[in-house]
Amino acid sequence: MLRLGKLWGVLVVLAVTNLDVLKIQVSFGWTAYGVLLGILLLAFTMVNIAPNWGRQNFSRLGIMLGGETLIEIYLFSLTCNLIIGIYLLRILFPRLSFTPSVWSILLHVLFSLLAEGILAWNGFVRIYLSSVQLGIKWRGLFLLFWWVPLLNLVLLGRICAIVRAEYDFETEKEAQNKIRRLNESCKTHYPIVLVHGVFFRDRKYFNYWGRIPGELIRNGAVIFYGGQQSAAATKDAAAELKENILRIIEESGCQKVNIIAHSKGGLESRYAITHLGLSSCVASLTTINTPHRGCAFVDWLLEKMPSCVCKWLANSYNGALKRLGDTNPDFLAAVRDLTSRSCQIFNQETPDAPDVFYQSVGSKMKNWRSAPFPQSLSYLLVRHFEKENDGLVGVESMKWGSRFQMVPAAGKRGISHGDMIDLYRENISRFDVREFYVELVRQLKEEGF
Image 1 (cartoon, rainbow, N blue to C red):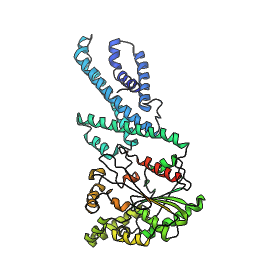
Image 2 (cartoon, rainbow, N blue to C red):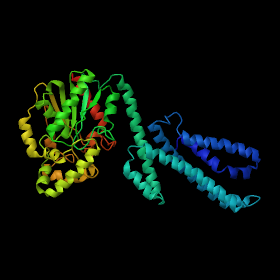
Image 3 (cartoon, rainbow, N blue to C red):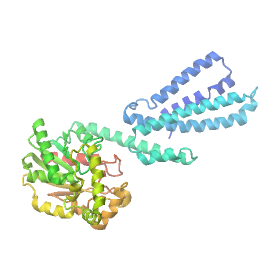
Image 4 (cartoon, rainbow, N blue to C red):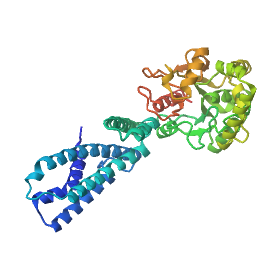
């Protein structure tokens, strides 16, 4: 529905683009025409700068909503201008005392297209630069098919719906956080250390944990990062993790930390706690989708894949990981430690420390469409060996500690390995990953950690 603010924008655009027609009908002087045109152009400029009055026009969400507003104004005003144009050509012009010249009609059309084009491109740029949920797919589809009649309208409608849903979701969350911020729901006794998984770094180029840390901080949490190598043998990454945690304790003055570790980071945390004397510095360890019993498909791949292919992959990944910040990446060592055989030995040699609270979290995809490539493909491979899985890790392999929590699958989609760290920054229906971590940390706070 066209709201009052958008209706004002439509009226301004229609007035700007049809002022020349109005002059012919009303027949006022050029001075009055110039003054009125100046006022309307100023109003048109204001519509383009601040399309939503009083709605944070210059915040990310305000810019995004402004883009959606401008697109709707563009669609309504363009439709009205087409109707007006048809009316003028068929009905009005023959009744005028003179027939407009071809040049005046051409200038009118060009000026109208220019004004409408400014609206459209302003709206698109705003949305393309500010929306998170629009994703690559919808951006790409519109760039490919904007010129196709009817299809472009369908795509525009879908884009506006996605942007509006994102705005409503985020503003609701902001309102909720304003209330919770006073209670400091996530202010645990000990700070949180987020430990990343394999083949990623915490904050190199983008945050491994997506929007999660910001949400926890807004609700009172104190956040640090593990900062270990992205590809190394478990024992080597654990040694680096230990050094980083000891430095955190020294610099912050806290006695212990709560570790929340994703994927292989959970194994590295367990090794550091049990074998490297870190148990006295850790209050709790929460593992997220960690392959505690390994990944059977990794065993199969290492057995079946030719050694030359393994070597080529290792060299390619090691080169890329050096650019991500690893000083001495070892792709094959990291992969071998994820086999079910290696994890069986690891579990036998790495008992839980009695003074550390252990718990685990898991999720699962419901079908191969639950995640983009390559997890869509790996899901099918893992399912062959371990049935229910998150695209990389079997559900049974994720279970560890005194408490295991299975994330409820959202509808027909399910929750993938990447979804659990907000890798795609996607708002998933019936699963809010940021809210999940807020609740997870709130439980740690209630239990005295």
